[in-house]
Amino acid sequence: MPKTVKLTTVVSTKGQIVLPATIRKQHHWDPGTRLIVEETDEGVLLKEQPLFESSMISDVFGMLKYTDEPKTLEEMDAAIAAQARLRHAGS
Image 1 (cartoon, one colour):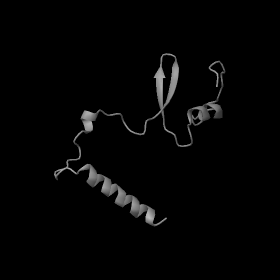
Image 2 (cartoon, helix red, strand yellow):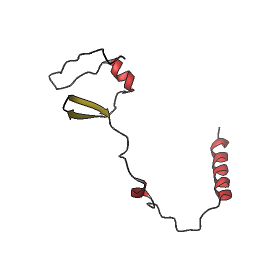
Image 3 (cartoon, rainbow, N blue to C red):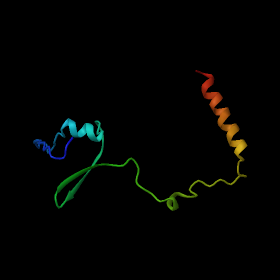
Image 4 (cartoon, one colour):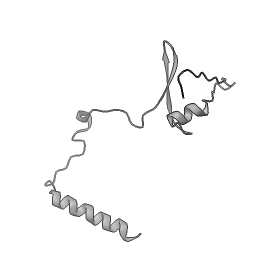
């Protein structure tokens, strides 16, 4: 949608607004999408809320300690193949 098109909406008695369908479709905002409402100098800004908070690798590195001997690539490949066989055996 071009930036020059101005759409309007109405605030309901419950304080709700309906976002025009063209805006919702352009941003892929399906029912249930959570939006962040941010006050700015120019007005109100709506942004999609991320599913997860951002984090740094240093915040999560080593969270799950593994105390056994490291697996080899061959052992990992064999485990993946075995799991794939189990999952596809039923289909």
